[in-house]
Length: 325
Figure 1 (cartoon, helix red, strand yellow):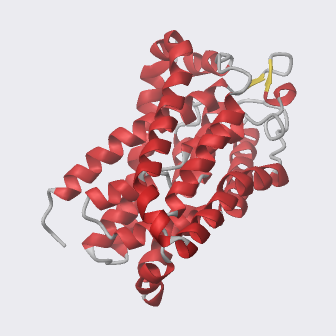
Figure 2 (spheres, helix red, strand yellow):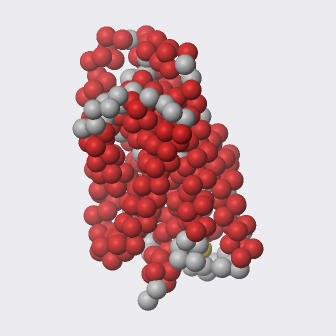
Figure 3 (cartoon, one colour):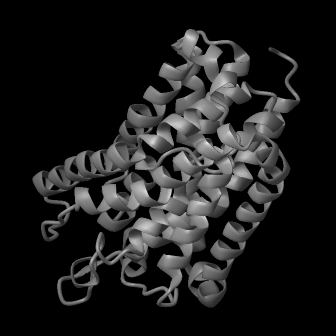
């Protein structure tokens, strides 16, 4: 059986996630974003925006560079990859920076202020940028496969407004509340921000692992294909960050942070969007009668949530041992 046939069978797989998984994931992700916002201090970020070259470069690579590289990657492997797997890659690339990128940037001896700034900007703007990128690059891909005749699939509507609403509630509101808490209750914030961040990330990790456990036989069956795919995609993400920052001749400290920010994506948000029936209605996206099944999207997004922790810590360790500043 060819790789494409294997991935096609993956699309049709129904994961056992439970009826309340989407809601729980949304709550956990909102708590994580609130914890991240507790770290944001406008005064500490002043220098980043006084000399904005690094953050403009980083945000451009995050918003435009990674989605474009992802699009080129799936076009290059379009004869092997299935539409749902490709759309899963586009969805991950459209999400803002991940919730552990700041810790990894600090561990890598990067520019922590730049890292926090990129996370804050990409997250605050995610209600606009995430649905736009998913809509734009998703439709470019669907147009491409329609023109080439690689495969015929029904027209898929990407609900911009529903994605915007979901992302704003899950990311925007917690970020605003966290920043306000940090500004008006600094003593309380200093006491709770570290344990709160650790608690929320641990809960998120347990949540993702909990999604794997009931489906471990399926993941064992398909993991080799998804592992290689996510490995290449994630490596391209890190490479996009480092290459772009190097081309702009940024300080090495800034290159470390930008590399990690672009390579660590908020795949938890992608999962939350996928599990929202208002955004991906089952009758359209998971319907055997139409032949549109999004198992591939779920597998790609789930494995990103695990793999980018491993790869990010590996990259951060390498950076940490490089003395160059």
